[in-house]
Length: 319
Image 1: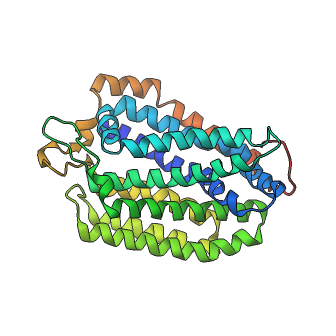
Image 2: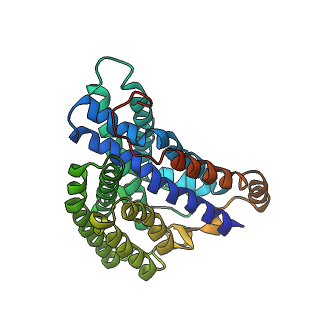
């Protein structure tokens, strides 16, 4: 049952990295777009799906807290500064996008939107890096200090995720708006992102943290990520969608069955079974929460289908 809920958590996070990454990518690109009408057009392109894309992280956090309370506590302890900034950025991004068109001046909100997008993409990448690195979990079962955040590889992982998300946003706007400038951006940014992903993957392979149990699988998925983003100039949005989803699978596969490795006491390493809630709790969640996942998928698919047409003119319909 613990592996089942771990898979559900993975599905929710994959969906968020792929779809929520769109919100972050468009937000980061907003500062490069000139003119309020063009910026509104870019936000309108993501507008119908914007809040729906963010629902996946709400579901993921709910599953994490309910099904894996120990991971939630210890991971938050290992990267508390990053999580605090990431949550704040998530709130600011959602609020700023919805408030920017309510006043006469939108420049301040545009800056907040861009900075929040960068903070979110970097923050989620850092959390993936912390999981790969491991945390100082001691024999008492608690994390002491933020040592993983001092590792350059953790920060390199964050930067790689920023580049993936940025390429994702550009590919989306290129497709949704038929924007030639964004198409050119994808052509050069995709290979740059691919190169950084390969360098980061090589760094983790050479450093070989104790928590990585399946380095070959993780590396192959990282290479697949690099290939997907590298060919985005040719295959566009579909390729970046895959590229932004794969890092979650790469990290989870590389670590499994470990969830959070201890860098100070191997006996304190947290596995999937160790982290899971009791059997009764997991069974209750299976009856109460699992049936909601198909509903969430159906709503998301219908939303994308209903708003599949490209935005051709600026409109105040959304933002």
